[in-house]
Length: 126
Image (cartoon, rainbow, N blue to C red; front, side, top):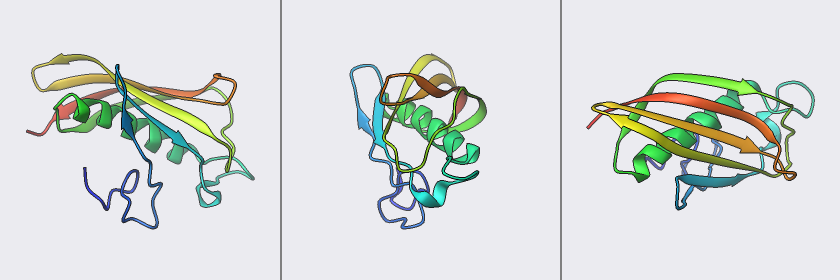
């Protein structure tokens, strides 16, 4: 991926700088949303939550050898995500069909409760 990426780029001081690692069935990242990601008081903006979920699906595909861009992302937010608290984001590929990669991602809190999840359709670019 690119070092200037808003979601994962270490060189992007205005970004989330997610540190994503490969797992046996996909990818994971421990996240602590910064104060600037706030929407409503002390709550992470829904667009930031969606960005994290999107990034996890694309990285899951990338780690399987597929460079992709998002064609469709369906997000479901189940409860508020608070700034400065720790969460776990995961992503995994569900199926691959020609140029289409279907993947899912999830953010859970310290109690392992789902905060938000997404399903994505990704298009291979290579």
